[in-house]
Amino acid sequence: MIQHVWSVLCKNASFDVQTNSASLLNIVETIIAFGNPTIEKPVLLSMEVVSLWARGKDNIPTMGESKVSIIGQDVVDVKPITLEINLSKTSFHRTRITIDGFPIAKAGRYEFCIEYSMENENDWRPAARIPFFVVSNTKAKIQEISDAIPD
Image 1 (cartoon, rainbow, N blue to C red):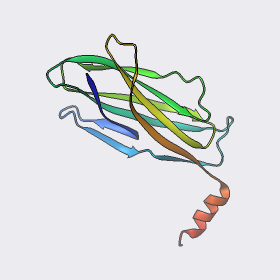
Image 2: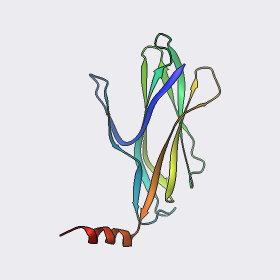
Image 3: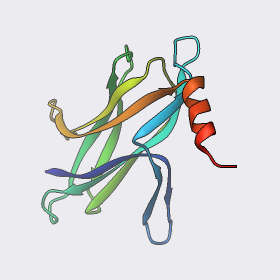
Image 4: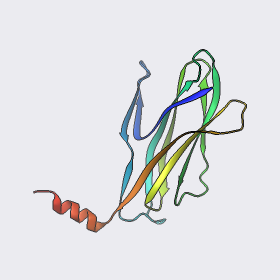
């Protein structure tokens, strides 16, 4: 059995080779778009989805796959990304997906859906949903913020 431990959406992740520890930098909850995103001028997402997986029972090696997909108002025909979960030799396994320049053409709520399946099974089981918001910031709002900053 595979156990999902955690998943995080962040701008950067760093992994220490000697200790195998992870540093998750700039956790993402909200993305501010300057102006209203459109098809012609989308917000380009650049971030990482990092997940930690564990054996359901420590002494039983197992294998499987994780699948990450994005859902939201404007997301159409985006194929999920699948990665191997290899718990055959170790008790923990991390997956890391780098998203570089994915266009979002509308402000609103979006989610990364993380699922997993066991080796030799066809069914996908839900593991996590990571919501984030794209918020438009118009020139008027930018000016309002700018005016509020003391000289």
